[in-house]
Structure formats: C-alpha cells, structure tokens
Length: 445
Image 1 (cartoon, one colour):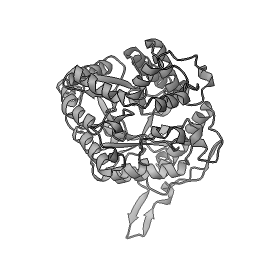
Image 2 (cartoon, helix red, strand yellow):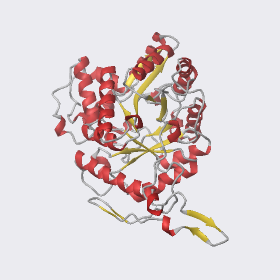
Image 3 (cartoon, helix red, strand yellow):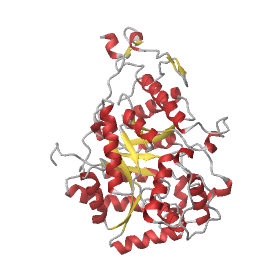
Image 4 (cartoon, helix red, strand yellow):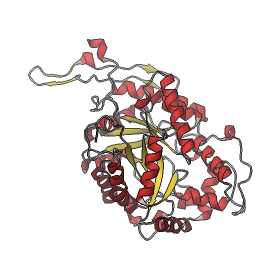
C-alpha cells in the first residue's frame, strides 16, 4: 500500500462475552468466560493477528444496584488484566479506563508508566470523570461533583500526571556501576504542583516510559467533553447514529483542536460500531433479533430511567417517551442522554423499540449485515469526514471478533484502507503520533 495514503485505525472494545446486553444468554457464548483470563487472551491474540491498533477495557468503580443486579456483566480491574495481556501479545496497544474522579494522579501516573514499561510502549489511558452518584458513595461522598467541576478536576489531574511522567528525563537513569551513579540527580525533577484539587511534590518513582506519555484517550461528547478532548486527547471514542452526526462531531472536534493551536491530525476519532455479521443480511438480522428477544425489559428500563433522569418503570412499553428533563438538569452522562433523547425523537421510537435499539450497543450504531455491507459503512464514514477509524464492539464474543477479522478486515485491506501488518512497535506509532518531548529536557541543555 502507498505509504502516504491515509490508513484506517481499528480498536477492539473488550466487553465480557459481547456488547449486546443479552450476549451472555445466547447459546453461541459461554458466560463462564466473563471471568476467564484465557478468554481475554484469545480476544487480544485474535485482534493482534489482524493488526488491530489496540484493545480497550472499559471500567467503573461501582457495584451493581441490587434492584437491577442483572445490569452487571462482570469485568476485571484494567491494570491487572492489561498487564496479563501484555505477556501473551507483542504489538497491539493496551488501553485502560481510569477515572479522574476517584483516584489520585500520583498512583495513576505510576501505574500507567509501569504498564508502558512492561508492555514495551503499548499503554494507553482512557480518561473518564465518572458520572454516577453510586460511585461517589464508595469513596466517602454522598453525591458526585457537578459535571463542569468534574472536568475542571480532570484538567488539573491530567496536568499533574503529565508533569510526573516528565519528572524523569529520558537519560536520568545512568546505571553506571563503575562510578556508583544510579541516576543523574540534575535530571530528576520535583514538580511541586499546588492547585485547587491536588498538591503533588514528585518526582515519580519510576523512570519515564518508552512512549514518554502513554496514549491519551477520551470518551465524552458533551460540550465539556469536547473541550477537554480538543485540548488534551490523542484518540477519542465516540457514539453517533448517523453519518451527518458523525461528520458534525468530527469537524467540530478538529476545529476546536486547531483553534487551540493543536494539529487536528493529532487526534484520532473512533466512533463505536456493533457489527452483527451474517453470510446474508437476513442471517445477520436474525441473529440481531435473537439477541434482542433475550433482553430483560425491566432491567433495561431501569438502566434507561437512570440515564434519562425520569422513572419509566410504569410507562407503557408501546408509547413514546414521556417529557424528559432539560439537559442542564442532567448531572450524569450528558452526551449519552442527548444521543438517546435525539434517537427516540428522530425515529419516533416507543419505549419498547428504544430498549431494543440500545440493547445492542448502548447507543453505538448497530450494523446487521454482510461483511461487504459493514465494510461499505466503514469506508463511507472514513472517506467522508466522520471517522479516522472505529471502535469495534462485537455483539457476541469471541465469535463476533473472529468473523470480523476473517471477513471484514480482508475487504478493508483490498480497498487499501487498512494495514496488512504492523509498521511500528508502540501504540503511538500505530496511531501515527509523535513521542512527546520532555518539558524539563531544555533545562539541562
């Protein structure tokens, strides 16, 4: 393939035995795999064999509501699982979600630097602020912070983490046995951060990682989220339902980045898609329907009630949604509230229909069709200014990933859109991003 041609990026979103909320009930999955390391190793190895840029693990810091315990699908803590996956992979990136709301920047900087070293430069951090009050109540708080405050905290948090990653210059570690000099003290730096949310001395207690900074990923699409992503993110996970919505988000984010003095090409936009594959469109739609019929409506409606800020438990299933609160009244996931509200209004969906549409991918676009149809969709969004790549969310695992790798990836390669093999070793190299310069290096030059 011509080296100058723009290339598609693919990330595998790891999610238990599939992204459809009823995947664990389908006979083509094994729910025992929810707690199986071998299962996740198989997924990572399959994605690496197909030259995916990365795998990604979502995470939250709250347990299931006992009233809706079926909402829990089970997953491992990210650093533990990604470190295990680093052992049986060599090239694929390893992206983990960690909240700025319920962790301390020093610990996080150390953990991601460790993962970057252990994986040979393949670590990435998906930055989230955590939306729910249930999470807050696990951390000595009665309620979560306001939406804008969460992003203010995240901005300062990231400032601290970046400074800590730079607190060792690249050549600070000497290991000079003859002189007995382990490090060069002039190249270790206390960051002396004093801010509204954090007081951090530094330096970090681990040298700078192979990538300098692990890849920075962000997943919010609200106004605050877009502003944060434009200023900081290097890859963005997002959800849009139509090409026009995808183009609007893509263009807006790139323009915001340019206005802040950043190179828009330095942000990789990755919408999520749920590819429900079949040898024919009818076969794919039949699988999609089978999965939808396994959804527990009461559980799904309970989750939707929390998201939309209105109790839907007694609302008629075959009626449209009732009036929803204004966006300003939502302190949770504003971008997902907007997506669901707009989807219901645009397509005139009843509550029953909305539950079915969301069951497949929680607001991400579900594509039920042949490999050619899925490849067509990917090519259209990629070439028409709506995506730099995609967050692949198979409805059932491992089968959905294996079908995508076997049948869709070759089509993308035939069209000159996707690599045949890796050309770099680090996650930053996969995404075409530079290694950040160390802010302190010029001090000693």
